[in-house]
Image 1 (tube, helix red, strand yellow):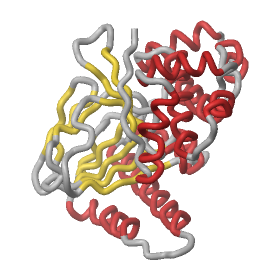
Image 2 (tube, helix red, strand yellow):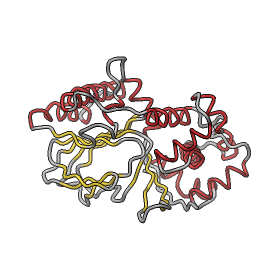
Image 3 (cartoon, rainbow, N blue to C red):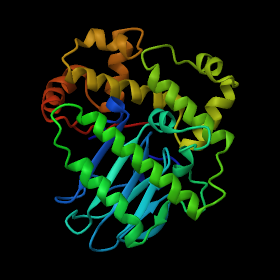
Image 4 (tube, rainbow, N blue to C red):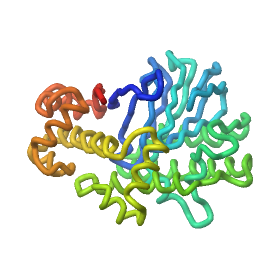
Length: 309
C-alpha cells in the first residue's frame, strides 16, 4: 500500500492518505486474518469501503472523531474521504474482510431503483455500523469463502466481480431494512463524487478549475470551495497527489519518466519533477530506483511520506 502523510492545519492529528489497487480494477478486497494491522493510524481514501467483521474479540473503530465498538457480524461502511482507524494491533483475533470500491464501480452496479451510493453515505441513520445477527451474517460468510476459494484458472476476475455484486445487493437490502428511508445524498456529496470520478478518468488531461467547471456545469469557485469543505483538502492538492500516484504505477511498468510526466498530465518534466519531489520527498529517479521494481514484483506499492505546507 501507498501512503502520504500530512498534518491537518486545523487539527492536532495527522491523517494518512492511503490508496490500494482500486484504480486498477475498480475494486480491491483483502481478508485480514493474521499478522499486524497494516494501517494503525488515522487515514482516508478516495474510494468507498465496507468491512465485514468476523473477529473473535470486539474492537474499536473510530471515524470522524467518534468511537464505535465492533463485534462479530458487524458491517462497517466508510464514505469518501472520512478519516478513520481500526484500533487493532493484531489481526489474529480481529479477522475482517475489507473491500474498497471506486465511485465508478459502485455506480456501474447501481440501477434506477437502487442507488448503491446510499450504502456508504455518512448521512444514513445507521452509518457507519450495520449490526447483523449470526443468521444474517452467514450469507456474507458464504460469499467470502467463495471469493477466497475460487480455483478457476481462467475467468477468476469475472467470478470475483460476481461475488462483489452479490455482496452489494445484500448490503443494499440489509441497509434499507434497517433504514427504510435510506440515506440522504446531498448536492455537495454528489458533486464531490462526480469530481473525483472525473479526475480519476481524465488524470492525463487538463484538469483546471475552468475545465472541471465545464464538465460539471458548476461555477469553478463553488467547485473549489465545496471540495475543500467536504474533504478538508484542496482540489489542486488532490489532483497533484493523484497524478503522482498514477506516475508511481507507471514506474512499476517500466515506462520512461519523460513519458510518464506527459501521461499523468504535466505539461513539462520540470513541473513533474518539482511536484513529485514535493509530494513524495524524493525525485522521480530516486523513487523509481528505490521503490518501483520491488513494488511491481510484489504487487504492493511502497509507502511515501509527503510534507505539505
